[in-house]
Image (cartoon, rainbow, N blue to C red):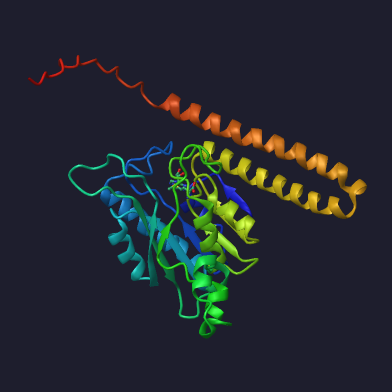
Length: 317
Ligand SMILES: C[S@@+](CC[C@H](N)C(=O)[O-])C[C@H]1O[C@@H](n2cnc3c(N)ncnc32)[C@H](O)[C@@H]1O
């Protein structure tokens, strides 16, 4: 528990006891040809779908009877994979993650794809689901607009609204403070919402394809346990660094609170935590740099572009 194993998910799954997991939250390779430092995203369609069915069959027995599963996909293979899952579970939602991609360029012979398709599946009717944990508060303007007497004391106005099934959350662009060196890193905001809604506090989240460790980090932040796998050792180093930085930040925050109450006693603890936070921050940066260097070393040098001289500007007479 609370470990990400640097190994093939299918091999690692065999060690997880059946019926021990509250939530499978996973973001497998999409088979779009991405480079994760392995060939997992570059399979033939048959190989990919066959492999997907194998890991689904190995993973589902790990769920508790009231457990759930979220799976990130794209439009390309979500139809086939949703059908596979619908034969084994009940589909509750297709969530559209609108990545808020700015309108620039893109496809010229079709519409630019700017969303991920996420499937939400449950094993049984009495599945765990805590809507109150993920409600979105109404803004002050809406509350004000509903200030007439008929709305006073209205519970729905106070508790906020259901997030619905279109989630508009910006992707993590290069400058984003959360961003590490992984090509398909998911925003914590999205993963934390799924964890809070579908895994009870103290429960266990399983992610077979951890990537940069977003699921592990979200679980830790939300007071849930996690377990998972990642093939690429460079990404495993990033995961370790992200988790260590999170722990150091938590110690720092606790020390700051305690300092207010009993200043002299906790100062050494705070100094220690600050040092740990600095060390882990630089470890994250190092892991990211190392991953970049490894990726760069693997990539063949891009061929030099020949310069095409610009035609002389037309003169209108
Ligand atoms: C779409 S990414 C996950 C990104 C992740 N959700 C995040 O926020 O960073 C899929 C990951 O699965 C890993 N992977 C591919 N095949 C695997 C396997 N058989 N076992 C474990 N990990 C694997 C890839 O290396 C890649 O990092």
